Image (cartoon, rainbow, N blue to C red; front, side, top):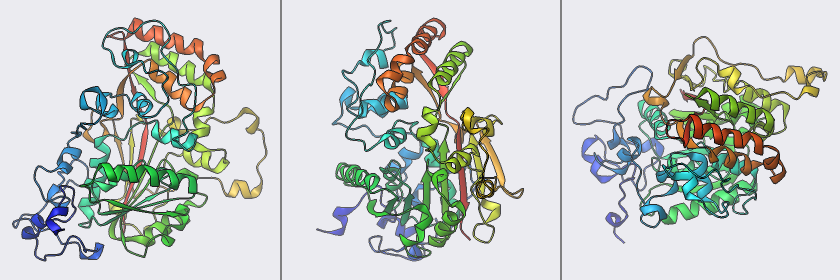
Length: 462
């Protein structure tokens, strides 16, 4: 088969690009070090000082002015012809990440689309609850990652614009602690190859199955996947030194037992100008614009207890301490990363990041004495006064997409995914109260606005 038959709009280095560069390379065999240097008709690419809000030159990643990368970065989602709901996938149809996730798995029994998507008032009759686990997902942690919030287009723009500012190579990305590879398909839109690693063989088995399916359904994508079992602290054992262009950890950095070793191991694999990206979000959302529903939802979460935090953070004292710091526990050694390019970003925290990410303590743990080793091992902030902080909200371009209008069933779905039928019955009064308050106080009588608090770290390898 001729090489042209393999051409893809998502190809990182394509034939159309070669006229715009000094050195021509074969995109099929280019290595990270061979990636061509940007030279576009004599023009110099302009970036903002903080790497946010700049225009991503899509010819760097796909060689077309109107390619599918542009659609991704402009928030336009491709419609699939094989799906239901008028040819739209559940994510396209619903802005509610909880419900979209639920519709993608065999959890609803039966589906009640009227209660989820109808613009008219749903019946006061209780909508179907998700009271059983699905065998297609390996465990509650995978359910947690897949239940949302769905990463918005603004996050892709934030990460890829930052990477483009500092690197011209789009060859290899490493998805660390990836579990079932939730973010790997996104990386495949930009990078030629993605290596997926996770400490658990069960997570990799799920990722292999799901990413194989994804690859077969997206034959034009240039992104291909390899897998290995390993902790993030062992990143240097997965790839050769200075070979990785983009390394990312989503929702998992706080699980590392030695974050210093993790960062140094990842840095060893990063090419000069390569990007380290770390993302995490609060396990429960916050209602905005409706004080009565906000108070009712808080009562629901108080009654629910530690369950969402336990799923998000595990049972390790250190992982809970690290999560409570947002991502401030992550060190970025100055000898490894360009300090002036480091970005510590929070979204929808409104100056209350420590409060929002703080993991509730068990009452009986507060009086438990700590050993000397435990006190020495306590997580602490590693942020220096030389690093730049940025706070974004929904009004800012880089903060969009973490706020959603959801139906009352969203709260029920979220709880049912991670807890037992007994817990659902115990929380029924709080759920009913939320349902009635949304119908009574929201402008359309159906939905309410929620937002997620998010933390992001971006760093560039020296």
